Length: 159
Length: 258
Image (cartoon, each protein chain N blue to C red):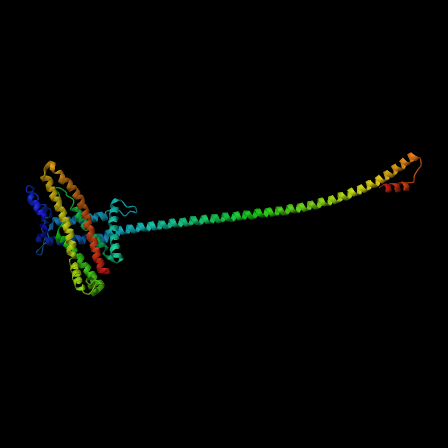
């Protein structure tokens, strides 16, 4: 078995020590800092990118919230304005109506008084006409003039 | 070993399955009487270092990674997650070490699967017990030092399980002590044996492909294809297991979950 040839051991040990030491220095001083740095840099980059994405997302959500708040406020304002306009209109309409009602009532009362006045006048005229007519009829029938007072009395009796 | 009997009965096969594990010098170096020759094993260690360094450093550092960068980041996060699961945040300081161990063993195991004909003979660095044992001892000694630095003499409580009847305690202390000190052996042998057995098996089947001729050779060839897939899985798994166990030993030393 060549492995048990002791004469080769010193040279193998010496060269193992040399090569292993060289490799150790190359790896510890150059390779690991380089690779580790790259990996760390990448992780940092990913972390910052994720943070940035999170920040942007937060901003978006804030904007959406602000927009919705503004929308709700505008809606509420619009509602208030509409309600106010409606109230004003209602008040105006009510005022107009009461005014109109009062006017109509006044005119109605006026009309009624005029009607009664006219009626009274008409009735008076009717009495006069009845008296005149009655006196004429009596004159035609019996040929005598009757006194106006008697006719009036007779008509009042008839009534 | 079974593999040796295979090679013996192979007879006509020219290659010994264990030949692939042989270490031969490319450049002879002698440091004060110690043989420090640059061998094919050393060459493959250097190839491992270069390939891992290229894999990790040649990738770009873009926000959206390309293929090469993805591989590096995948390996980084794989080991980082594994360490976080086992060690928590207390083991941060050991991340480069565990990562280096994992990548070095993974590269060594994976290069063992690659054969570049003529130019380079395949060789698996981690199929040598001395290499895996050196790494395991390093981990073991490191964990022990960390344990004593962190807890002082209190680290010895690791050998005394709590909530155990007094009569069983001496026995359990012995068992815990043995299990602690066999850690480097189990850690190294697991990796070495897996690598060696796998490659030996592949070589034996490769011998059968040649030995059984044009018609019969397709059966071992099909088995070899399947085994190669399995070996790639094992190559990855053993690197992972080594890293996980290192983490567990360090966790014992740092957090003393016992």
